[in-house]
Amino acid sequence: MPVIARRLVLGLLLLVCSIPLVADTDSPDLAVVAKIRHEGIKQTQVMKLAGYLSDVIGPRPTGSPALDRANRWAADTMRGWGLEQVALEPYENFGVGWAPHYVSVHLLAPSYAPLHAISVEWGSSTAGKLVGEPLYVTIGSKADFDRYRGRLKGRIVLYQPPRATSPHFTADARRHDAQSLAALATYPIPDEAPASADYARGFLDDLEEFFRAEQVGVLVQPSGGGRGDYGTVVASGIRSARFPDRPRPLPEIILAVEHYNRIVRILEEYREPARMEVEVRNAFYDKDLRGYNVVAEIPGTDKKDEIVMLGGHIDSWSPGTGAADNAAGVAVSMEAVRILKAIGVKPRRTIRVVLWSAEEKGWVGSKSYVAKHFAEVETMTLKPEHAKVSAYFNYDNGTGRIRGIHLQQNGQVAPIFEAWMRPFADLGMTQLSPRTTMGSDHGALDLVGIPAFQWIQDPIDYGTRIHHTNLDVFDHLVAEDLIQSAVITASFVYHTAMRDEMLPRKPLPPPSKYPVRR
Ligand SMILES: [Zn+2]
Image 1 (cartoon, helix red, strand yellow):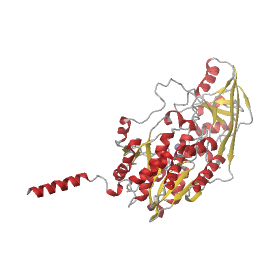
Image 2 (spheres, rainbow, N blue to C red):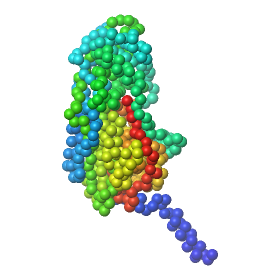
Image 3 (cartoon, rainbow, N blue to C red):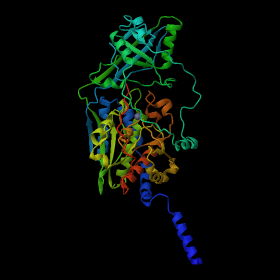
Image 4 (cartoon, protein in one colour):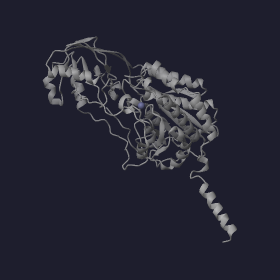
């Protein structure tokens, strides 16, 4: 081969090697990324949004007046930014709403102590102020019922064993490090399978029936979940209690574990008398049994009948103010569309933000939306809109910044997301994970085959302190993390909206069932 020809071949080879591994169409638009970063960092409103939702509106159980207020506030706010098709979209049969109004619990003897307590969700009110000797019962099976029959009427009944505590030797909060991120790059076989099983009636239902028949005054349980200590009280409730044909649950409170344990020790170990005072007032709302999701759009242009979705759930548990779970996700999603409106993008596809309700009752809002618009999961009967959604991006893992994204076993999006992630390496987003993550509303879309993704977020103190507890309040949000999350969300949504093709999909999943819990 002549020298000139050899040089030509070498030149061509170098040219080929220098072409990036991703197609040109998936190179991020760095000019738009720069505008998104500038608007999202310099003009951020994300903490104001999260603050109004958590500090001012407060906890938002589905069906409560507070959630209704939150929905209207979110819709009005987005309307004010110029979003279109803004609506509170109803779905049938959420059931009865509920809100906590008042909890007051005290130990009066052997010495006075104010006790940290919250109401079980969807629990009833006490018959006024109950004052009396608490009774500790040990009921492990139906055979134990006879020992207590006739002794519980109107009583303050502690019905769960005390829970051992131990010092915490590890820090509450952490960020991902190179090692923990690298672990997410591996794919464990089998991957996390979506939990699915109909709730089967069990001993807890028998116990509930027994206590109801015995006309217990108020039930008391210790804060649980392995982290309900050091002032943390973890919420709980019965999801199916919202169904109007179910009897209303008894009044029930959850006590800080140290307070619960002390009372049990006084009664059981020292056999000393104790006195407690308990008053709980809750409200039920049964005039409108529907639930509502908030939707708002930035209309597309040449591909406006195709949709890119983003969102998070706007309902919350009640003991805190639902700040990390999930005012954070609402604020990030709203801020992402605010940024895109503010910089004046004209997306090819329509961008639709959806703020789901009743996520905490088992994805009720998102499942209902999917059934109405996209597909019946149990038969996989698809509706026309199913073919028109490019992707959904969900934010529901607390305040931690985005470190990557779970691909949900959709390997075809890896090179695309890799390219879109690159301009955010300096903000800490570097990791793709092939893994499936469920546990929030994107699961409802994923199970019918719509590309639906959840970010890899820094854990911070979400799993140790915040998630579903009285400490889920504004003070534990990390501003710079939510700013970063909104910027990255805006960029991914924008690039999904501008791509020539919709994002590639996984093979259509078989019919399945959504998970159902008690
Ligand atoms: Zn959540």
